[in-house]
Amino acid sequence: MELNYKELGEGFPFIIMHGLYGSSDNWLNIGKELSKKYHVYLLDLRNHGNSPHSPNHNYQLMRDDLFNFMDQHQIKQAVIMGHSMGGKTAIYFSLKYPEKVKKLIVVDISPFSYKMIDQHSPQTISHLNILNALYNLDTKQIKTIKEADEQLAESISFKRVRQFLLKNLKRDDEGKFYWLLNINTLRNDLPRTMEGIDNEEDLQNSEFNKPTLFIKGKNSDYIKESEKSKIQSFFPNLFLESVENAGHWVHAENKKEFMNRIHKFLESNL
Image (cartoon, rainbow, N blue to C red; front, side):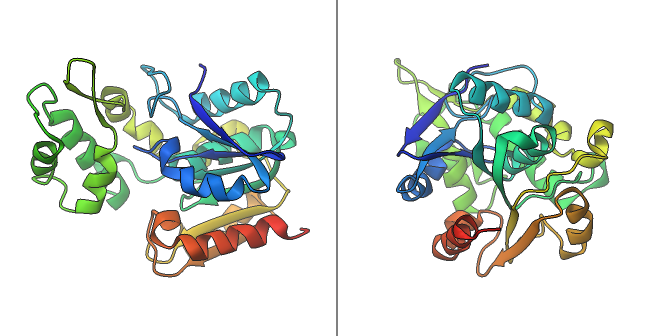
C-alpha cells in the first residue's frame, strides 16, 4: 500500500504518524517546526486521510506499510514518532526493525493491550461510541457541517472531539458529504486496534535498546506509571515523561511544553 504523505524540510529523516481518526494535517504545525532541522515525513496511515482504504486494519499491516514507505523512499533510518495508534505502530515497527530507527518517540499510548470491548475499558467504550456515532450519521442526508455536528452531539458530548472528527467529513464534486475515514473497517477491527505487543508471541523476546521517549498527558490514563518497568523490559533506554495540563491529545493541548520535551530528547547525546 502506498501511503499519502506530506514532506517538509531537509536533513535526517523524521517520520510522524497520527492517531485514530487523525491525519497528517493534525501534525503539520509540529512538522513545520521540526523541519527546521529534519527532513519530515507526515504520513496518512491506512484507512485515514488520503491514504487508500483497506478491509483490514491492524498493527502488523501498519508496521508493514511503514516498512514499505521507507523502502519506497530509500530511507535507511529515521527518527520515528507516533501518537496513539501511530505510536503503537511505531512500537511494533521498532521492535521488528530496530536497525531502521535512530530514536523512538511514543506519544500517549501503552505498548500493551487495552481490555476488550466486552470488558468495558474506558478507552474501548469511548472509541466504540465514537465509531458507532460516525457509522450512524447519514452523510447522504446531511446538508451542512453544523447539521452533522448537531447529530453527533447526541452521542459525543465533547465539542472539541466532534470538531476533530468533523475534519474527516468532506464534500465530493457533487457537493455530497463523505468520510475520509474508512468507518466500516475501523469499526469492525476496533478490537485489533486495542491489542498490544503482549499478544504477539514473536515480539516477547524483542528489545529496542536505542533512545526511547514515552511522553504522556498528565491528565491521560493511556499510560500508567505502574507500567514503566514492564515497558522498560522491551525498551531498556526508556525515558517516561508527563506533560502538565494535557490529556490524550498532549501535542495539541500543551504544545509548548510538549515541544520542549521533544527538542530536549532529540538534542541529547543519549
